[in-house]
Length: 289
Figure 1 (tube, rainbow, N blue to C red):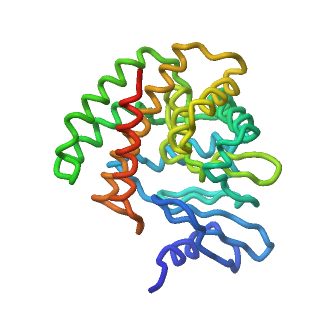
Figure 2 (cartoon, rainbow, N blue to C red):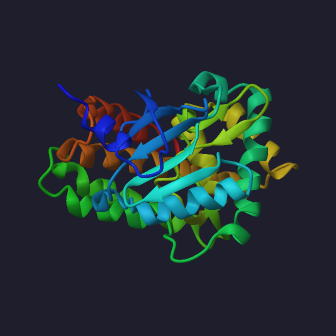
Figure 3 (cartoon, rainbow, N blue to C red):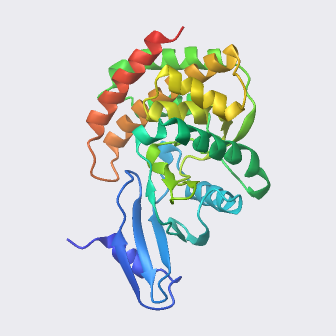
């Protein structure tokens, strides 16, 4: 069966001569390809349409990726078109969850996130989205009324409201909002942030909580992350907000996956992913003080 993505990449007007194309592994939302031109330059090509059910709008992703590149935390962007983005293909590899947990990497990641939250602002231009996880969760619940988890939505939304009430007022910065280990890339000398599908204005503590929930942090790792990010002993109130965001992040992952079950874009075991994250959310919410 012909990979239509290869044909789409080959047809891009960005190329000036013959190219070599190959699929890039990883990712469960977009199609990603590596390209090498006749001069030996290597590029990453990302193909993905808007996904309104997930709040993914490509104009927002591309604007965030351009700003991140200018801020020095993501690779350079060479070309964009609706549903297409061509960037520098970095040498190296993505981190794995157990590597994210290592103390030396927590320091590097905390510094990278501080730069995201403080340095991107001057490079952001035009319309951009917000990412308020509680609104996103409610939107997913509307989409999931006829899903296999429909019977659980009432209590999940009650939990969502409880978590939102615990957060209170927050300071808004520009966040990544999808801090899977795979989106942290190590080129051997430094870390980069990749994949800005869900980028938007949000609370910085959500990014930290999202990183923690996605990489299965234990309490000590949570404390180390917060201390590294703030550069000081964190306040108890900050820790409590962080824990509430961590629960909200787990809930969002449940609802994201359940929605993906109904409109899959790639071959992936979404039902198992949904069920795994539902257990993790239930456990985290039950432990919330």
